[in-house]
Image (cartoon, rainbow, N blue to C red; front, top):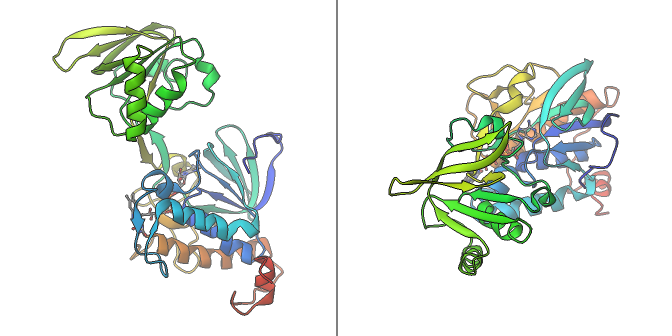
Length: 349
Ligand SMILES: Cc1cc2nc3c(=O)[nH]c(=O)nc-3n(C[C@H](O)[C@H](O)[C@H](O)COP(=O)(O)OP(=O)(O)OC[C@H]3O[C@@H](n4cnc5c(N)ncnc54)[C@H](O)[C@@H]3O)c2cc1C
């Protein structure tokens, strides 16, 4: 599913590139698939499902038509089941940075790791924008970012035999403390208070490690970093009583949660209105023909940021996208209930 092995220099050609694998991007695969259009999806997150998966996987949603109650995670699982017949290709942990028009319409999109797509249609389903890690408010942190300060763990091996400082009190901070403690030469977990917002089981395991002297658990806040040429050597930490001390470390991993920023969508030549992308309400197409915007990212008079609105937008988008992908084919409106041709595509007849 995660196409990491192909040659990144040669473009991946697809009918449609969907930017964002939130609920609306996922349902777009279904509507496009019924009309014979294949899609690749890119998402910055390491998981499928956008806000439902990242922000409220266990909360029940009560306003999905025909489903009285379903959690964020279960909705994403059901959408994945529904789109399986259309074989969507996912590229996670990747951000689409650039979108250029190279034909009529044909687009080239490039991700932050240099993967290139060529698509006849682009569907921006980027929700509230890109999820990005919240930066700790430490003056002078920039030179260390990417070398000694990391907001995500891509490869655990990078931290073997290092002195690690993990900062935060949520699930990410606790989970990485438990996973990295056995391979780090020394690990300190720093949180501003003794109250943790993580799963109780993780908190208990972390407390046990601290009790056995396998990690240091420290309460306080980082106020400054010291090091040379981007290589960290210590963090200056202030305790709640105002006293200061330092923690010797090679790497700092702050886990302060994620925030949503519009991000690169702003640079693709799309008209913007208050960080949203205005679209028409016939096809949810932007000011650039062939680029559509559906779900939370778009704006039109009366827009409601609801999942059900995004589903409706995906259906109408697909009708117009068909004209770009198959300019010579006439589209015949059909019901899934009665069309054997649609049922064949769904693998049910
Ligand atoms: C706590 C909470 C409760 C909610 N409850 C409800 C509810 O009960 N009912 C309801 O209808 N709605 C609810 N919502 C709103 C609902 O979650 C959103 O309307 C829905 O998630 C929008 O879906 P989307 O696919 O448009 O965007 P998102 O879910 O935001 O997904 C967009 C995805 O695009 C990705 N992305 C953005 N930019 C890029 C880029 N450049 N490259 C690659 N990927 C990118 C992001 O990482 C993200 O995963 C709730 C929201 C919250 C926060």
